[in-house]
Structures are given as C-alpha cells and as structure tokens.
Amino acid sequence: MGRTWNNKAWFMVLPVLLLVAFSAIIPLMTVVNYSVQDTFGNNVFFWAGSEWFEEILHSDRFWEAMGRNLIFSAIILVIEIPLGIFIALNMPKKGWGVPVCLVLMALPLLIPWNVVGTIWQVFGRVDIGLLGYTLRTLGFDYNYVNDPFDAWITVIVMDVWHWTSLVVLLCYAGLVSIPDAYYQAAKIDGASRWAIFRYIQLPKMNRVLLIAVLLRFMDSFMIYTEPFVVTGGGPGNTTTFLSIDLVKLAIGEFNLGEAAAMSIVYFLIIMLLSWVFYTVMTAYDEER
Image (cartoon, rainbow, N blue to C red):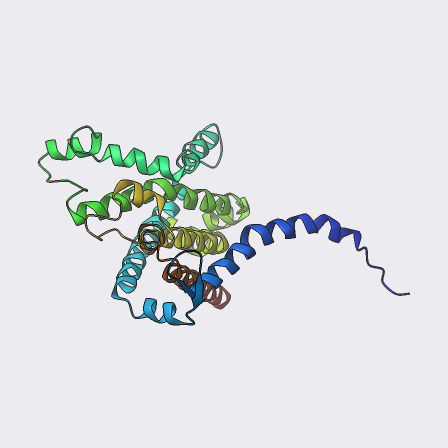
C-alpha cells in the first residue's frame, strides 16, 4: 500500500516561507543587484560587474577594519568563554540561590544594545561618569574619547559585561544536565576537582560550548551598536569595525554599490569563519 502524503501541512508552513522571503531573500537580492551596478543619481543605474568587489578586496580600508574585527572577536572569545565557564561552575545547583543567580545573569541580556552603549558612554566619561571619574581620581590618565587604548578597553569591558551572561547560562544548562551518579562515582574514586572538570564536566559541556563559541563569534564579529554609540568608531578609526565602516560607506558617503559589495563579502566571511569554527570543534569532539 502506497504511502499517503498530507499536503495540508504546506499551508501551515507557507506563511512562514513568505515571511522569510519578504524579510530576508528579497532584501538580499536587492543588495546583490546594487553590488553589480553603479549610479550617478536620478535613479539611473548601469552595469558595473565585479568592479565593486575588486575595489573592496584591494582596499586597505577594508582589510584594516577586518583586522580590527578579528582581533576584537579573538579577545572576546579568550575572555568570555573561560570566564563564563568559571562562573557557571561556581553557581549553586540547588536551593534558593539558583533563581537569584539566573535572574542576575539574565539581566544584562535584557538591556537593548543601544541602551548598553549609552550606559557605558556616560559611565566612562571623566566628568560625570562613575568609571571615568574614579579612574581619574586614582591617578589613571583615562579618556576613551582621545586615547585608542582606553577606547578598546572600554569597548571590550562593555562587551564582556553584556554578553558573558549568555555563555554562563549555556554552560550552566550543560552542567545541570549531568547526572549525580557521575559525581558520586568520581567521589568514590577520589577524583580531584580538576579531574572532575576535565573528564566529566567539560565533555558534557562540549555541545553547549560549541553553541556559545559560534554565537559569541558571530555577535562580536558583527558588533555595531555598542561601539558606535560609545566611540563612534574613534578616536580616528581605532574602533571602526567592518559594520561601522559599512554604515559610513552606505549612509555617510552614499556609495551604495561599494557598500552592497562590502556587505556581501562581510556576510560570506562570517559564514566561512563560522563554518570553520563548527567543523574544527565538531571534529575535535568526535576524536574525543
């Protein structure tokens, strides 16, 4: 007897497909269209081919912004992943402290990105900001507006404060899923704290760590709102990441063709690096 297919399910999926097509595919095709054309205004376009892509790939401005993005993402991963694991390991697993800690961890994630940038913009000011004023009082020559190093430190600390909670919650979810029998067996064998972490907790967190690394890499590589609000990409181009440079190119200079080509290259780089992260981490997991 042949298998019957219920095509009515397609009517349930169709609204979602239309929504995705409207919100993602159509804008993407528009960007692709702009990336191969040029205009002198008056809504008159002419074919440019791969001219914009060649200009982007041979642009020092693009590669400098790319370097800043890679450095920033590497610093963020090196800080937030170990810090998130450490905090998750020291959070209570039972009792009244569990909901309190979870709520406190979730609070930074509930704040919108532009609000986070505004908070740290005021927080770091040397005249009225608590952080800036305190550091100046203690004798530190801190000024994120004029000093490139201070600007980087401010943006990094801001991102760590905002997003480490995501790593903590993911790692905590992996930890609480470990059965108590594992810990009881380790206690009988006299395993040390490090041995428990290495052979029980870390392997059980592999999947959530993969998700945490991928999410934090993509978010940090696409960061825009927070550094734009705090530093505006300055001082100079010190904190001008690819996303900020893209907006300056598209809106500030109104160079739509080059900006469209840059956005496509930006998107492909994010996809490629995310695939590399996923492949390397899953291969390592399979070897173990």
